[in-house]
Length: 119
Image (cartoon, rainbow, N blue to C red):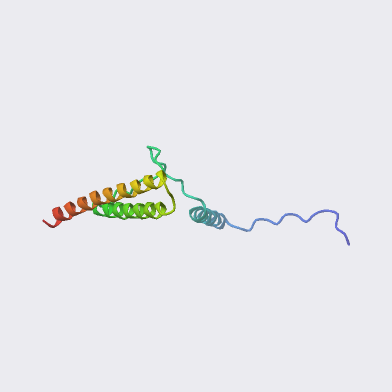
């Protein structure tokens, strides 16, 4: 037998406390999902710089990293100089020698810093 009218809506049997608890649970779930799934806003540097050195790094660490980078630049340039000829080779060798010179300056600064700390 077909019933022409829909069933009446069921009465809400939830108490106010249960409704409030469900609302709080929904809000807590929303906060948890937001924490894990929404990306945090990125702090842009006020000066518009693309790269920034962390402010809490000590001077010795900065100099040691600069020294290693200069050695890498020199090695890359020296290796590249083997593959070219003429004036381009001279330019690349000059870059390698300049990196070597700056590396010596950084090493001297590290020595002075170490002498100041230990002395």
